[in-house]
Image (cartoon, rainbow, N blue to C red; front, side, top):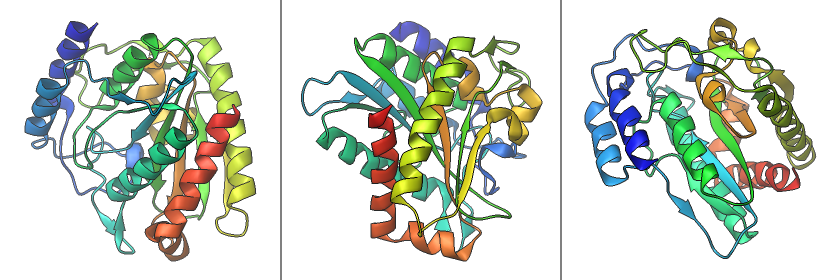
Length: 272
């Protein structure tokens, strides 16, 4: 399995890049000249791409994917004093700590804020980690939105999608997924996390609901988000806040806000 993951990781290098475009996974990069060296270092230091950590024997594995940098966006543009890639990483670290304290095994798709990992490769890393774990495994992808609106929203694969890549030359163009069982389980996972976020974030952030991947720009084009297409386990994407909204940004920039977000997400993941 490690040789396979290394092969697809190196094949995905040309898709990885740095950008200042803000807009999460919904807008492809225009400049794909950077980020390759970081991806090569990641593949060399961890060929299998599996970095699970455990505080004690756990029955479940929770895979945390802090969004960006990827072939779609570096996520580094500033909005109200924060960048998406930074917030995603900071909340991911807190979420990891909360989950481990409650006995869950945790796997992170990257080891540093700026590590470049293609979205397809993120799913392959997660699938490999889940295959090695005997218990239940789920995935949460952490993102922040931009543009209109305010508050949090959750997305799950509501139909099969066909992977088109970013420049059309990536490996596995035309691959279709996820399977119906993953779609159904992902809907249940999204509902469980949404319920906990509603309870623990009431009065702090607006609720924008649970939606299908097909409601996003990339999902609308492909049918599902790229990492959802390749996922073999339940998966949910969370747009934690709208960073271009000053109130949302102020909440998530605070230590207390990020801790509350991590606790709300963890409660739902553990409830599922």
